Image (cartoon, rainbow, N blue to C red; front, side, top):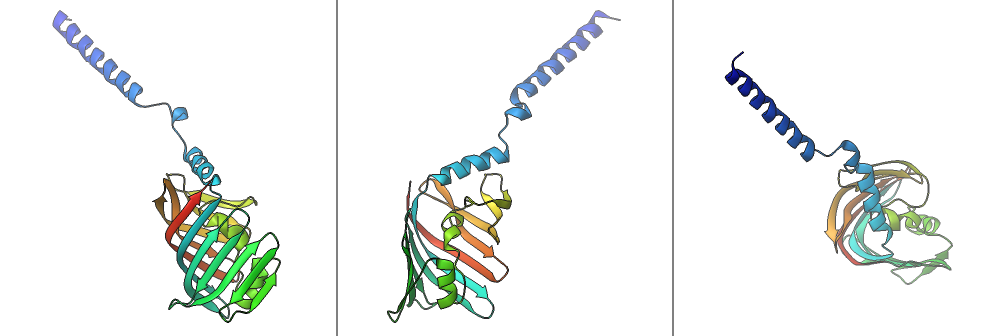
Length: 207
């Protein structure tokens, strides 16, 4: 075997070794790459810091035999909620005010009805159960403290589906607000109610 042949083969082996070494350097071991699960946990940790928010949008409810479609203006605080519900043409239908003492629904005629929880109150007066106890968490894209039956998220860690407390919840769109990605379209389905919340404006996001 000639010296030139040996030299050429050694050069080829050297180039191959250098190439493989460069690939190994550029490709981190799988164990060091962030998983979608860890990205999801990081995103949820950011959402966990949110204590207050305000939103304006559209609310659609389909339930047998009644339905509703209109606007919503919601101010959520750590221990209270204030929600104005509007008709499709913009007239106020009702105000729902919730605090530690219970919840009060005031109609457009000025009649006030009080109850211990929003679900039973809205069923009596509006014809559907508004799941306000969980909706303040679900609206911003995080589960409640209850058991999660199933969930999925995208590559950025944001929830795409959630099954919890008798509701199947899906998220179809997110937008950045004050450095945090919040959903703009949330669909909730239970055995008797389909509820769609379209958020047009997020404000008042704070820890």
